[in-house]
Image (cartoon, rainbow, N blue to C red; front, side, top):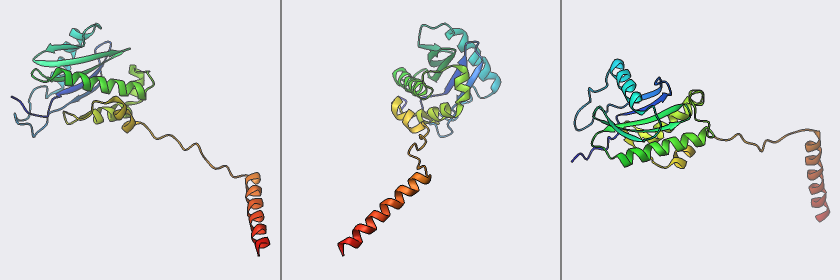
Length: 185
């Protein structure tokens, strides 16, 4: 029985032609089974991504076993999100992490999740990924929590506009209050 917390080997975003938009591979050094040598080079990663895309390019399923790894994926306009785990990992947990990440990105990008939108807002996408998966450990599966942690703070819309009218109004208020205090004595 594997009681390890490490459940994600990689996170990928590929476009509809199979080209990499974003890829993050996890190889934790402190894993009980030791550091993985699998998919360590760029050449191995590209070959893996090419084969995975060939199997998943048509919308339909959402989980496959590919090359000894469990791949959970989701199509969105012209990109495909993938979470790759070991063959013995819990596919429901991987699926819930991918769903949470995807929903959070949809919230943050206002349902404009396409290749161009992902690249223009890569900072938000990477922050979402970091809030969902930390060094291969799934840490959050609630999309609203992820989106709230990542979202940019709104600009303060209650700016104080200072002009002649506001200065005169303030002067009138101060003058009236001073007059009231004098009248009390």
